[in-house]
Amino acid sequence: MKIPLLDLQAQYRAIQPDVEAAVAAVFAAQSFILGPHVQAFEQAIAAYSGVAYACGVSSGTDALLMALMAEGIGAGDEVITTPYTFFATAGSIARLGARPVFVDIDPVSFNLDPRQIEGRITARTRALLPVHLYGRMAEMEPILALAAQHGLAVIEDACQAIGAEYRGRRAGALGAYGCFSFFPSKNLGGAGDGGLVTTNDPARAARLVRLRNHGMEPKYYHQVIGGNFRLDALQAAVLHVKLKHLDDWTAARRRNAARYDRLFRAAGLAPAPLTLPTTPCADAGRTDDAHCHCHIFNQYILRAPRRDELRAFLTARDIGHEVYYPVPLHLQACFAALGHRAGDFPESERAARETLALPIYPELTDDQAAGVVAAIRAFYRG
Ligand SMILES: *Cc1c(COP(=O)(O)O)cnc(C)c1O
Image 1 (cartoon, helix red, strand yellow):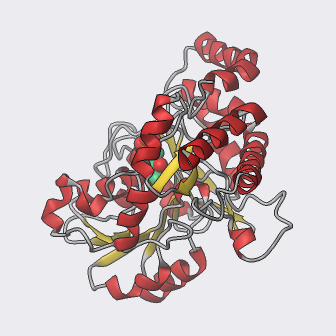
Image 2 (tube, protein in one colour):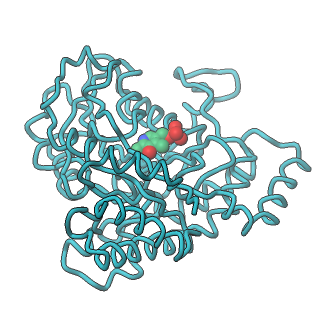
């Protein structure tokens, strides 16, 4: 049984008529740049996430870059973030001439460990950039408290966490900015690249809208240097159709995670040798989380002994999996000038060595999930 890591064709079959009608409407109007489709989608995302303003942009990477630009962050500034994330988080900081200052992760949530942040704050620190990795929100209360105490902006990298909740508030609604990606493999994925920045502050919202279009206001008068960071109308139209299904898809991902949990335990693979992902609700001893979006499972990540041997075993059996991310950012060649070495962020390095992503997409069937678990069982019994 060949099982993909992600099956976007299964998703498309369920929504094809609506997507095609939305695309046809954009073609009929021949209005491709910003305009009503982008605006309607921005309003829908703002409502969905519980924020006042949403600014559609060209990618999650550009969302991060624009949020940092809107805060005026540049050469000489420091931004505190995690080394265990997709590259764009720290890449955006460095592209503006600022320094990514890394803080290690909490081994259970894989997110920034708030207890280690304060020791890294200096006179140059301008912002805290937590990532809600894999769809589980970072521990925001202490992060927001530290930011308030030190006068720092909080920029949420919510690229993997649309709709995720922290104490009743959704990703992107807690910090000064929330940055989203609509890369096709995200829970809300477009037909190509796309992203969005949220904020509750009208002044920041105005800066974002200006930066997105070359800092231009009014037409051909440039107040600041921005870029072309616009979201395509075609992408907005597709994403708006898909947004209506997002809560159902999230519920299915959460059911899939619960099913893996049952299957791995029944197979005698958990709690050992595998370490399964938990949700914040479960960590707090709550069992009433059926409708809570405290983890939206953009990825289902477990820790596995002999991870690389297991990978080879799954590859040979056509079972989809991935390693997010094999090299933490402080050890990437492009950041050598930051002067880090192996051992600086031990939990990030351990996560990079031990974790494995399994298929969790909403359409994953009982048989497929059982096939994944049976293969892993065969590996550890073999
Ligand atoms: C996907 C992702 C990004 C970048 O998004 P793009 O749309 O691919 O540019 C940034 N940060 C995180 C954590 C991501 O997962």
